[in-house]
Image (cartoon, rainbow, N blue to C red; front, side, top):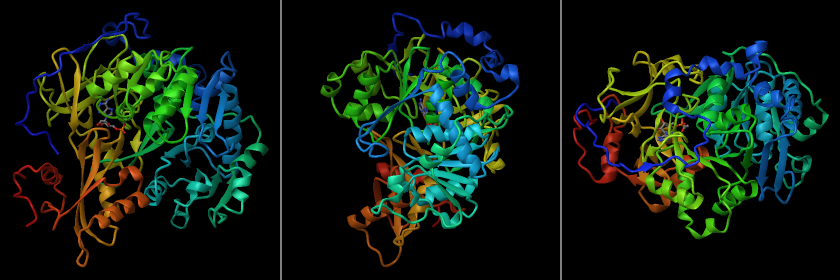
Length: 604
Ligand code: 6R9
């Protein structure tokens, strides 16, 4: 959908400034000066490949440290007090860089046994555990490309991503393997099950073989047998790094492929935006199924040799505060939804914990509302800093920096070495305070390499010559701050997760009662947006609350819980254009009880 010519001038509302910390010791000292002179080339010398010409992410984030002074430094702290896996009463573990070098080498051998070679895709469908991180590192070691999948995905979501990526191996566990439709995935060669031997052999467990035609390996058994040394497969800067599936406004989710060279962007943004340094204890709350959980949960922080905390299990406000206290977390990277969920639990709870260790907080995924910012500042003494970026951009683009004052509500300023702006539908920059398309001048190191097997989709991002088109709308104020305004397309961000309406609609119409479905995002206090579905029923079915619950549950079981509609309205028909496109503009007007406007292109 194009930005409408009419709507345009925005008067800035917020003039409240958030001041930088008094003790200004940020890594990036002078943003403005640096912005003028910074060149990406200067970052390349931070990596060993600069001298050797031999590229592999696992070398730069793990082996390089394991072979040097950080050998015995803790890379990963893992805590899941509720876990029943591995240890029946929770897990509380530490892994040094050397430990991760060894275990990812072992895992590399397991992958080789499965026949995995350079460039192959390996899906990782696991809960947030050390094995998930070790798997990803092992996949890098053999030069293959990880495809991390959210633990919440159900059969349809798993099927789409595995068949599109043609992954040759999947790493999963007994609890999740039932959601992998092996019979429809005959390209799969191997399955690695991360289960204790006792679990996979126990009488009470599902003892069905995971897959009839592929080799099935037990993770822990194989790891024990494998050697702890394995040299990485050496790659080129342009070789594949990772594929993240993400939603657009039309079609199924698409695979965003990044290249090894993206590490240049990961490292520098981790240094200047996350402000990471040697003695930090850093906690990124994102799952590696989301780009934040890889770019800033694995690659960036470990390229700097930082210690990272990973918390397993479901969200619990108490557990989160406890984790900050337990590890004396200094830098915290999370999302507005999480902040709002903490806020909803009230002021008393955080008072029970010592949160004083925190010195810097960043936020990503959706706009950070002023109430959430103020709340987090009140309980920690530190204001969260916005970071705007996307799966496709691979790294931070527009941010508020620790060494700069910023306006409350503003998304921020472009990272040095990038240029972000606001343009009209022809790609011409618009005047200050005018709403338009948020774009970024092409040519930063972490920009996606391609959309997996879909050149046409890839090209759509670059239709405005010289620009990467984000799909967001924004405006720039006279002081150079960029303000996020919303999505231009129909992509929904619910609890920070990107959901495409098409994927939900496709799942809905598989339910026997559903004739047609149209899906939109509806603003919500905690989740940012919730998924709302308008549904017309097939003859013989009548609307009821019971049917609503059944339909929502159907999506939950087939696609993913976060993609299930939280609200359903039944209608006689769903408004469509003559070419058959669902008119979400009309659905949004219905939802808000507003007049529907021009419907001349509608069906009837
Ligand atoms: C990293 C990530 C990208 C979309 C993006 C925008 C929204 C992300 C934001 C933000 C306002 C921020 N978004 N950060 N909106 N302020 N600081 O989120 O990637 O899941 O691909 O989503 O998220 O709409 O276009 P991804």
